[in-house]
Length: 414
Image (cartoon, rainbow, N blue to C red; front, top):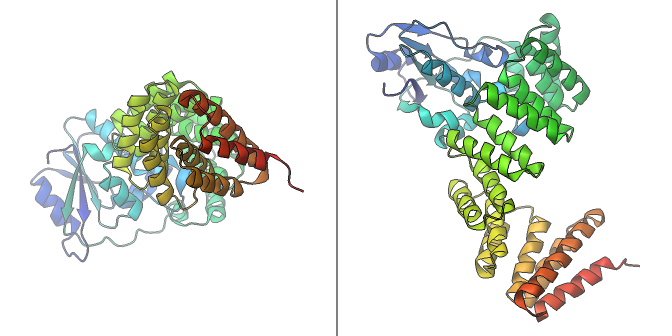
């Protein structure tokens, strides 16, 4: 084994037992089998005492239930967090290595592995002809976090926490379920209880940061993510979320520092590189921002805001033909045809004096915007049209046409 942590990825329709595959890999080394992966998201400590030569996790996929989605997902159910904990522990235990077995991986897990997200880039992923492991024995919390019903998950977490009110891992799970179901007051109370018993556990601070974001308190969220990153310096998501929060707080220098650390830990995370580009843009470092957004597109070609953000920094550099291509690439991939971005394409087309296309996109963008949000877009149009007139040295016909579009939509219709 060339890595301290090796993952055996089972292939379809295979018949080799995991025991044979691990033995072929580990040879005559002493094995310690840890078959508790399904309980990892609900325990603070997941790694055994050092001493065994090879630790084997025969159903590693059970550690990452995927019933929750998006930003609601409990951090301790995510492979990038749990695998990083293992790597940190192995780095401090030089006589031990670990082998995880993924015979029934989820689509999410395969996506993280295939993209080499975070700790996945530091381990060996070996495809082996493995037979599938049988479903795990019943575990109420594991089953709840595999299901897609948030309300049912909340009720299971409430029952579990009532039986162990001082267990911070159970409080963390309940806090996540509260957040997911919109019970933000109960979430705050539950996570505060977890903090009281496990103030040095980075996962508690991370979940609290997510909860403060739900309340639009970005300042407190940033403080929580900063503490999570301090407690676990290898925790890429903590640095990434800190950087994103600092960006929202218009602190681009600090944001960039946090985001660059996140990128060092998770070099293939396209969202982190997208935020790096935004920070560089806010600092006026447009060419560097351009390179960042090009990297975003290379990592995630279908991520529409990589194209839109590239278009924006090209526009700010006065490279209107290049900006047009970037905006159009975003628009063709964007099922929602985001009105603000479509409007920016219209302004780009006006700078190129493509009057008909600029008018069509501007009207389509404004028509797709509810009345209460239209004023903000009209203000942006006016500001950019003034800047373009100054830059180009004349009020070209396409610019005058968009000025008339602004006037038309700004006038209340009878």
